[in-house]
Image 1 (cartoon, rainbow, N blue to C red):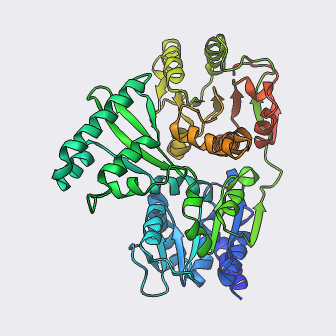
Image 2 (image 1 turned 45 degrees about the vertical axis):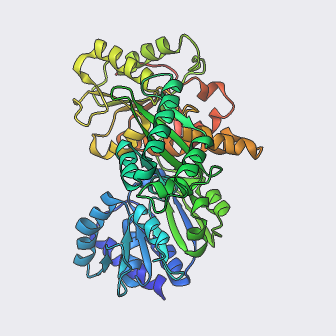
Image 3 (image 1 turned 180 degrees about the vertical axis):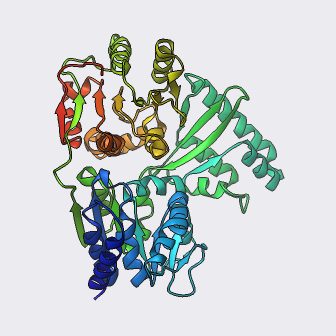
Length: 482
């Protein structure tokens, strides 16, 4: 049986290596059973698991790779080919990988990026017996959205006019009319302006009878207004703008892919992950859902989150943020990371802290001093934390709740409102919780402390869910610099 063979091979491999992660063998058995039975399954790992999943996923694939499609982004693909395959080969395990975007001719594992997977689906290259293996499943929905996104810039308008010179004057007039509209609606230089359905309708009416269109215009014309949102990003310096098109719910847009392909997904966000509900809504009936919890022996995270803090929409919040951040940074000998998505507030705080602590304070850079302070967005920290020393403390200036100023977020909220659903607890809060656990995971490896200066964590009923996500933690009642 494949499960027994994978168990034995991995057990032999682990005897040669040192790893404290307790779920290697369990994950390998679950993967082997899913491959043998062609299941659709979701394996939810704790955020602290990081990338320990490699052996549990790859060893079963070494033993049965037929019709398996491994979905990896470019950094993970490089690690697979340059680190993990040689590591397996030293242990006597061979993993045949096919990295082209056409199906493999033999029993190799077909390695595709998320964008490559979408193209393979659109070109009809995926067969019903292909089984998807998706590590980092917590990012799957967003990566599908990125793969489906369309962007149209000034050069694309020029190519469209060149392809259909008979409509040159009409296309130029439409572009100028849309340009006047988006710049008139902009409230600031870096604004993102939502484009309503009339813009797409006017474009369809104009080019619908022109014949074949150059890429990416076909994608724009085919988009359904109830499932996509279009918006403009502005460049006031050049008086130009770019037209963006994003899908609201990518798993539902790719429903045929989800319904027809069995999939094994490994998610690293624990039980806070809404992926299970998203997959079910999109039509993927999961045969197995397993939570692989970490042992409860983790040291509690020191948490500074006073009960009486101002809310972000109050006048005194900026002063409170600066005062508390100054006290937290004072006397620290290690790295401090300040997390704040609001661009204007982050830039002001960075400047004010730099005036206090000098060159120690940097903005979204990966070369801090040993006692440096990095002010950054949540996404930036999640993307670059592996390139930085382990932080001594994290300061959460604002919780990572998506802003309704984002056209995509606003459109998704509107869609939930039309269905009479709780858009905050079904969309904004779960997506924020997904970022919190992996963001603070490095603190547990370094014995660092966490400070939350957003008063909503104590002042709102849903703040309890944030505190639950952070378990285990121990309160810091008084703030004393070390």
